[in-house]
Length: 549
Image (cartoon, rainbow, N blue to C red; front, side, top):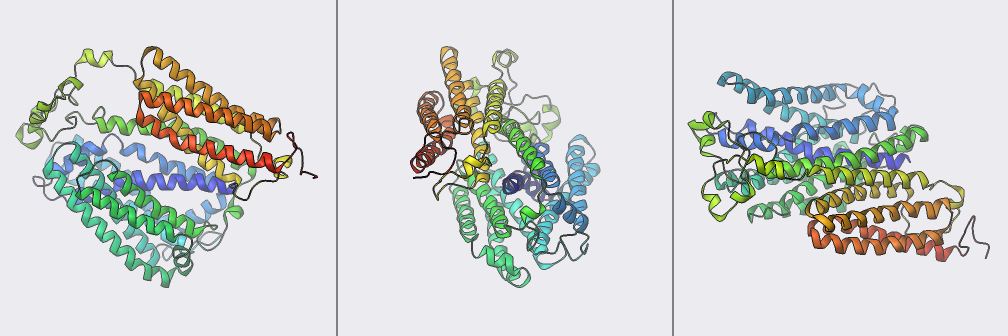
């Protein structure tokens, strides 16, 4: 159970690094964009890209703090009583950054805008540096188990300095990549070249510092160096490959997969750091099991994390999709176009009342020639379906399925532990770590497909999803409540058949939704093989102990 909670904690760390890191990196490019006139368009792209999502990304930081506090209280106490200076500076930077970003957009005087802009930009560098320094202090083992370690040397040391610099550079690379793709979506060639060059430079510098950092870690954090060059080496290599692929896609003017490659490279670096620290929470001491809270508390943390993931992840996905389409954001943002004439010159103030984007009917071949923002037709808006309703319904249904299955599942039951299981069965904690994103993918795919479907097709699709979720929850009852691997095998075979039907029906409606469901179907097929192997190894269909034959 402790390992499962640690996995949930690290999922939040990776999500914050990939999503919040891009926000911090945008502040770096805001800082070096130049004077008011030269930096106006690059800063405007940052504003319209960041405004709808920057607060939502901090959800992951709150999630990480809560899981660490409740799941590993002794580690939380040790970290906060030793590394309180960089943590306070990071939190202060988040507050100043948010205030600067908000007030800069609300003020009119140039002097005030410069002041708030400087607060936003400098805080965007301070915060990731402090978080990177905290990671370096943890990885190098400078946080004592009892806490109250040296308040200065714990985060002012070679490993922490390297971690802080790499955090700032990685955030800058992510932000430049995301902004390059955004400029391509807007058909703004000037901003595309501007941010593409900066993304290439940030990627190259990040790679160079990473190579130089090898020697720093070898001298200052030998255990971390040994683990990174051992078990975590494949992740480090994949991260380098992902970074190179991202840069190649940027140069080739590709929007599909570019952000995924960049985010994957950063995520793999963070995951590699986590693997290198395993099984310790404090780098070289205090293992995960030693720092864990009682099992009752850990079970509550797991349940809350699963429910929160099923509710929050689809909401964030919807927010990012709406932001990418220009449905939410600042008022003068055009939809899939370049900067408006009012935004480029003196007419900006007069265009403040413009609508958020072009209607679907205006997206003709000739629309690219006129990139002024056209207000949405109110009648068209009223006639649109509530696109969030299917996502909410699917998230609720998936949450109910997850809760029902979790209540029936008893991996710590004696009869289950005495079963003869194959060597390739994953550890118990891995199932929760896998099912959480799979359940989220079901909710996202269901919301997409139901939004596209209409009339009888939507009803049939909803029925197919409901039947599939019922079979999903039913397997746990068949296997664990009946204590019958054979009944579980029958249930998972029915679930596989339902997955095939569901994939076929969803593919006719929305191919992307079908692609999202593929990992779920693949995992269910793997579970069927595992269940069949357990049946073959345990001869009694209603097995209550090890086979006597």
